[in-house]
Amino acid sequence: MRIPLFREKTPVKDAKLNLSDFLPYLVNRVGVIIAEQFGEETLAPHRISIAMWRVLAVLASAGAQRQIDLADLTSIDASTLSRIVTRLVRLGFASRARSENSSREVVVALTAKGSALVARLIPPARDMEAEAAAGLSAEELAVVKRCLRRIYGNMQARPRRASRSSVRRAAV
Image (cartoon, rainbow, N blue to C red; front, side, top):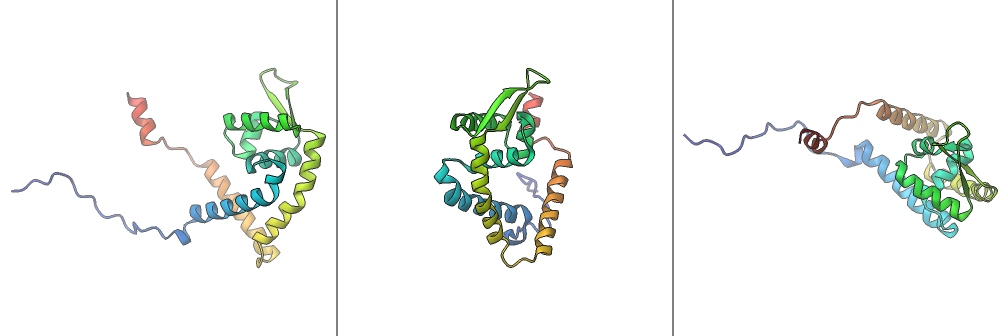
């Protein structure tokens, strides 16, 4: 009798992935192409990146923010955000100061120069959004945005599972 060297896995139902109908793939492609085009056409002449724009846009929309809150609102990890804020401060678009509530907290705010830049960039940002949504009715666009906000909320609420590598490291 022959003993197999490995155990055959049972076939996974529908192991093929149709990327043209896979939500994470579609969301990523849309986000990447919009960010690339907006970055190249609108942001590059001002020497700012798409990540820097996200920080500026959040500050313009939500006002001064603790750096930790800014990381959450921009979906940028804290260490990367710190470097971005440093660059924005150096360029004169943002200021950074210790919080009045806690000397350990840093608050980031737009400067007058940063506010003026955001005001110049909002019209092309809206134009890019309109071009991306061409052919969608106002109602369809509202549904897309509502669905994306719901999906984001679902993923935020989802319990995080440890990766196999982190489980192995913890066991060592």
